[in-house]
Image (cartoon, rainbow, N blue to C red; front, side):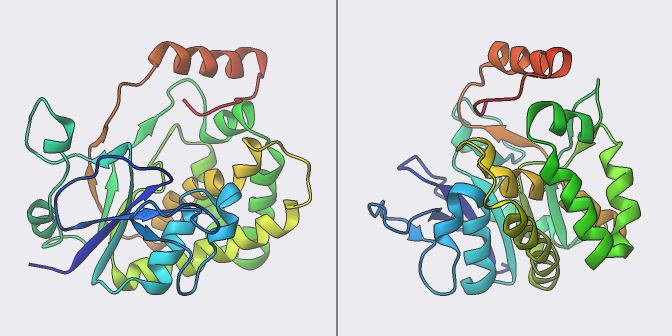
Length: 258
């Protein structure tokens, strides 16, 4: 069986999958009560940046400290879905055995695309979030990674994406992606860290990083395997759709996560 580790980013105690592939990581753990999970403030880390970088502080910890041949990220309330069907969603989570088989013919696993249908990736982001950091990312890419600019512009006009910073990759590609993505996100954070965004909108580095995975995949031309994702709790679809339409029609920015 391949050496595969998927960290589960969490900031609170929560039920976790029993499968040995999964490693719960307490993100933003610096100065916080120990939840009994792996903390992201040990070794080389950016734990203190969690209010801005979200699950990326766990991803950074894994990049710099985790010893595995394949590394990935999931969330405490959102997981890759396996082939099994059950009443309990935790019995449907992708297993090590299933993942091992997938990696017999690919180096990258991503969640199925999240579709927006009525607007582009760029429009959806700028309608719901502060748009200036997204425009700044384009300038950073143009300056530091110009080979990726065409893919960035193309992706901004698409209507679906591999979202949530969820993926599992072979270590060499994981290292390559993190080196590229964090180089951009650190510059973006430095540019806007003194802007007076509220706590919700200050999380722009974590949100914008979600839009970079497909840019990297398109530019590199790497093949990948899509796997469904599953929510561990019921989603308030009324609130989600209402927030989406208010942003689309009246340009009312999101004030909370749905």
